[in-house]
Length: 340
Image 1 (cartoon, rainbow, N blue to C red):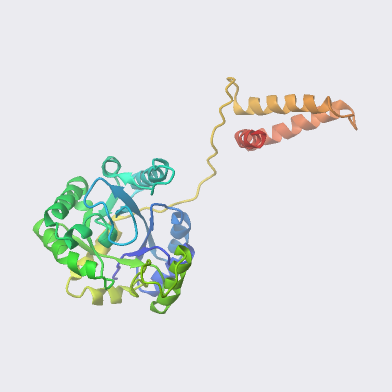
Image 2 (cartoon, helix red, strand yellow):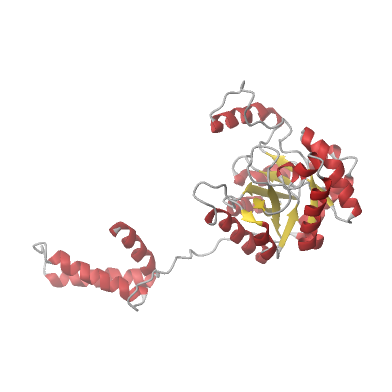
């Protein structure tokens, strides 16, 4: 069966994507939101239930390699990282977190290329397409710089690096493609055809354009505003084969990528943060200590309606239940920010 990777962005609820891919004849589909992995869990579970292989990915803003101005509206170019295994998932989570945590208060999230290099294990790299650090260089005639950036990517990821091609009717895509293909052939690097999806059906192009206007506070008739072409709909494997009929290997390689990715985001028990008591006590002891001290204060401020022994008995019972459930840390954290 054919599989052409769709990079889904504003395609609706992640839970619906599995059925969408199944109806399109795709055995696998990837979701690659910009910078974050917010939809990964829901996407994985529902896509698996639809009988389609979920591939987790992220369009990660990266600086320090290639050109530093994206073709369209983004400030920082993005590369696409796809998860192969558990190690790759942990590395991608770390990179996504760093993109936000290391950014300044008003800065666009992103990571340095050196960070990607340090966390490349278990990940497949795509060059990024028109929003990446390479395509704009070819478009501007900076072939040497573009080739150097591609070579750097390949030197780190080896056979886990693919030169990404997209065809959404953009002039910049057409101008960059010859250079990308030539470099890939000359350097024995696989091409991969991707489809940057923003909506499910071609008929939804105008509706999505209106949503862009709402998001940006613009008008549909406004010239200088964010736009995309009408080709960003969820294309079937057959449609992608037709679109890339002159480069069939670019579609074949999406199957290769799917076979190399074997990771599913699974649910697990809640992981609660530990509360630093600062007094050498365990969380359970600290909870009991604070509860007892608090009851002492309150009993001194009210006239007890029942014997004090009943208050203490009830307190010890409730504290014991919380400790049995393993939630002392949770209650301490909630108490801490309520006091604050």
